Length: 616
Image 1 (tube, rainbow, N blue to C red):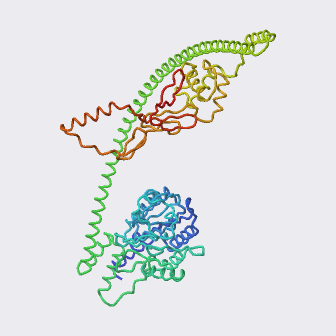
Image 2 (cartoon, one colour; image 1 turned 60 degrees about the horizontal axis):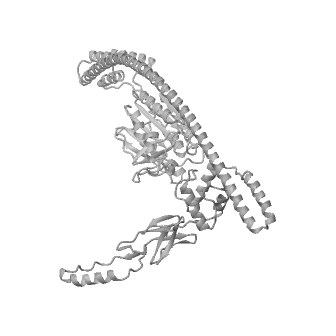
């Protein structure tokens, strides 16, 4: 072996002892969501995640993060952290088992705490498939996403549609990755659902764990074997599907172990080629410099010079990137210092503003308290004044009621004595007079109601039977007396109208309906206890009998030559006796309401309260 070969082998041995600097880095994120809070729990996703995660650890993945039952916040944090881990990886894999759904052609992964009451909630509570692809987009050789999320989605059955045209599909939608060397595998073809099976793991997860770990097996063939196994297990009801494309070379999840280099050949160029291949495995500036020193000319020397140029370009790029990073860090540091200073000034200004606001609020509070105290004092004075006025009014009313009761008792006693004097013999007249005298001196019967309350109760009953139209204020005035007079007329009673009595109240309460008649003007008709306006349809009007009649066409206007016959007719009409005319009024009494007859009218009864119908 040449001296260069010995040199390279020594360097290669040292590097192998310290670990390969250019070994392929593989990372994976495995998520299993079973314990959903707002829909029934799924049985297999957690078990499937454990099976796939164990398989990836067994085949030597550098990082395998297995997460279970992630809510929205935990899922967001997990994807962000895994994006950092896959930044310098060669192979990045994401496996998700749980609920997923398709809305308007986009696929979403659903965390365990999602509610999804309406179709628009998916944008806030679920994670689009593009967010998962972003977390692995920096992987250099292979980006693989495996979705075991094509189950029958219970959220789609209960969520409300805000827009009728928004489509919510069955299963997941077809995808076309835009990044190279990216594959997306579905447990079931787009638009169909997957089965969890009857065992601990789903058929899709079992098939993945059987075929993906095979060393050197191209992924396209591996997923073909997975498809065949799942179709056979599910009686051809579920067909897995893969979207995306890879290059012409075989791409396996588990690489084949390297084979030892063949022994030396008889060809003189074999030693140069073997040294070149050794240098290519280490690929450092020192090794290529040593190779050119040993072989300064020839085909492999040109290749070595090209490798040195590539290394120089990479070093220049790394130096430039390092300078840019340092500049960004310095820029960020200066921005942070300026932000801290600005925040301190802002905090000081906010503290001063808060103190000023506190002082202003304290002053405003004192002013309002003074106003409230003054208002309270005015309220107490007004209440005291009102109470004094009410006491004086009640005393005056009581004195007035006592006087009216005394006068009524004396009048009743005198009337009774006169009647007995006419009917009884002379011998008994004196005894009756004495009895009347005693009755007059006795106190009149009283009621538990005060005079004002009794008057108000009588007024309320008078309003109910249609004899009073004014308000019930408890004042027994001339209006109330006229109303009771009208009631006496139509009810046939003879109560004293000068004061409100218990007997009158009892008689009013005994009446079930209207007593005093309801009188409506022309153009109105009685509707219960109210007068309603008569409305005629188009081409009709209210006539003198308060009925709708058709409007007659206007007659032609007479010319000046016809004035004499018209004047003769007018004089003839004026000299004729007047005919009774209907007034269009409504007359109501205790028997009901009816139109006033032709030739009749409603007049106020002379010397009485109320109205009457008078006919010529």
